[in-house]
Length: 366
Ligand code: MRU
Image (cartoon, rainbow, N blue to C red; front, top):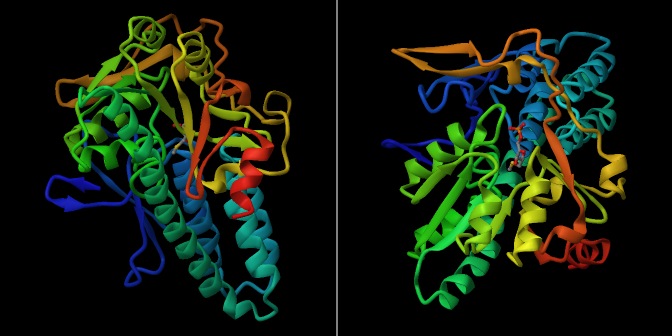
């Protein structure tokens, strides 16, 4: 995506610097646009854990590069496979809900388990990581094309008046490699000249909507308005939302979907107001091993300080202040599960389907 005069992806590898991968620091946006260089698996782990890089598809690809960097940095280790096994579990432990992470790491394990020549492992892991990066881009572009058809239809029904889209968290290009999942159809509609307007939930406690989605949409020139987290229901009751588009961190075989905390409440409000609620996701986010999202998906809990503190710009410095006393008892669940019955459909790179085992299978059979 264009940032000022330059095109960026959220993560990239330069073959002239084979010992590093570069990412955009999502903790500094929208205040500062900074690039961070990651050189080893520990730095990759921390970038994911501390959310310098966040969003299910991109952390999967980054973890794949983390496996490569570990092999590249320890290419002479006679115990390289054991070392990589250790790195795999370490990376997977960085964030438990986003399934792309575990998928990507397990894919890399298949690569080195299949090789008896240890010297061939770094190059093979790099090749696979680059393939995953390309595949995510292609998937998001297709999600954009399929989702665009839904927005075009709404626009036709509204006789060209702006289509109002509500989104939660950040499921744009920062969270993927390029385009996004939930935002890909929005970008496509905007490029095709369809008038759209996006309501952006702030997405407490880390404010990915306020800080990242607003920044992305403004960079792309898409009309958007920030709203507090719980405004969505009110907007829906007053006919101000035509469609809800969100991403996914983990979708089960039945279509149940874990996404940023608060997504479930938007789905309930959407159903009550007869508003279509779509989840946009690549197949790399679907976990065919799980059935019931509520019982089977592990929900990440993060540090209490994310709720106790608030971060913002003071003068020219990014500062944190306590918004409640530091000893306040806190629980910080960061994802929730929206049952498939509340989801109008899944927008994937293979097409749009019902959020159900039958729907997902129908796309897989194609
Ligand atoms: O905690 P985060 O910021 O990693 O959560 C991200 C989300 O919930 C996104 O909606 C999800 O990863 C889909 S991204 C295309």
